View 1 (cartoon, rainbow, N blue to C red):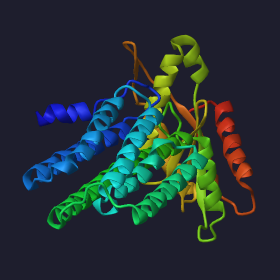
View 2: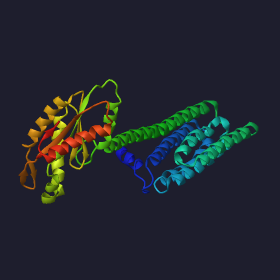
View 3: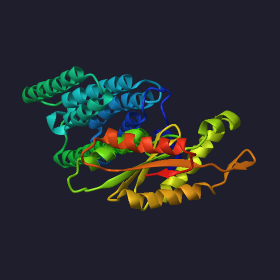
View 4: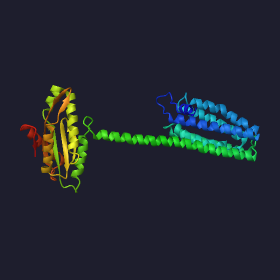
Length: 358
């Protein structure tokens, strides 16, 4: 039974542009106040204060109508139904039972809920809260000059005050709990979403390597760091890649890029970093490393690539890569550094490919 009730309370709304948190919160609020009504009726029955019962019976049909409105109407309509119902009851209760009964305190959760009923109507929220404040003072002024129709015995009034206090605390807790959890969940999702956007902005979608923009930022940091004395870059280009695309198709070319990227990432993981510079070109960064040491690492990669089998649609073939290496010189800008590595790369291309030019 509890499971079915929970499912019914958490039932989604039929409007695609409405979120369910507000409606779930309202339903839980109605259930809490339904418990309040039942306990109040038990108190009046047990203490023989029959004349106090009608005021809650006025609230009951409004309460039931408001509960079921959460399944049929939009957020604003639900809030207005709820607001009208509870305000009618508050005015009736203050008139019938007086200020000491405490019905006016139910304005407080009403004020809080009003801030979640709409997100953009700031002026409307201010007007609503000011209206509640004015109504509160009018009711108080009325009770100062008018006696209630029915007066609670002192012991029964004490029980009712305890009931009010517990109900209001529970209602306020539920409202704050649901919406604080919603906000925290939204913030957590936003953080994950922003992190994903950041990764996507810094990563090449096909290969999973960082993209040119990310490498530019890393190189810029290195060149502006006075503690870094030297580093080396290497530009690599797949030999005859256009021919692979033309003869085997672009899907095969994509598989080549993915396979080599996975190898490059693993090969330089302990020495530096690599990005997809564009097309079939890759740029390598070797921090705190001179050209000679970088040459050894890149030469080992070149030899290994010759033996990497590329499998596509039942066929297996091999390929080669040509590299150009340039060591950082504090006298040249970043674009010149990369340009020199690129010139050496094409020098290797023009002299037979499958080479490392330093």
